[in-house]
Image (cartoon, rainbow, N blue to C red; front, side):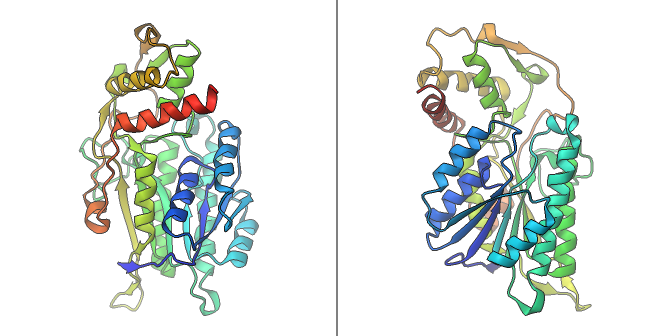
Length: 355
């Protein structure tokens, strides 16, 4: 692997107003204050834009952070960004997220996750034109959803992932294939990260912990899928961005094979807690932390607000990350307990919504 020095470098983060993106920008500045970060986000209304604005406001304090409102599916915009700022490292986190939404709004996934990522790859390819140094490392978000309903657990990056059960998963697998092709053809060092159920403060309201909280606060009933027989490898957002920064600093080596053509400088890793939690246990911890943070009263009747229902389309019963390779190559392993992470979320929720 090749070391990528981030000091004084320009870093492009797509999806910078998103949950992971905004936390990553903060983490980059903690690690390398001399960096310049360009953030792009289309600020779409897939969920409450006020959350995205809250995250962006927190980034305004960094003098070398520049925000561009725009869509990565806009090829001219992406070409201009690369020509103007010449990023040395690109982290692609812009994507239409969510498994369920991909069933009702498939077009959004093709635009953002396929066309958008293609534009990023093309811009990386042309960053080397005329002998320029160009992009030293492209890091991009894949997803644990690529494992589909694989029976073997924990999920390893050596497993076959040819049976996606949602369009979202299919677009993420496509990203890995496109990155592999571009790494082979144009020697772009690229690393894909399969994120496992990311959660934390100022997260996405379509995720279970956030959606459950909103419903419980309103006195509505929460639906627990597969009758509670679901397990998720919940991974706290700080652990995710810590992992991303570790990965940014080490790129796959550029090498040519015996035929003189590039051997793809390409890698894929899982980032997960390697500790799947049962959904009912998760709801129990969440409810305790919501009471502790005074989001809900102590006498709240949780049993009366729970409904066990069957599995829904596109979902899988378990996600479980094998993170051996991440630990081996980067000396890093997520370590935030579910209780600690949900406590931080509950305290943030109280502060943000109930002041």
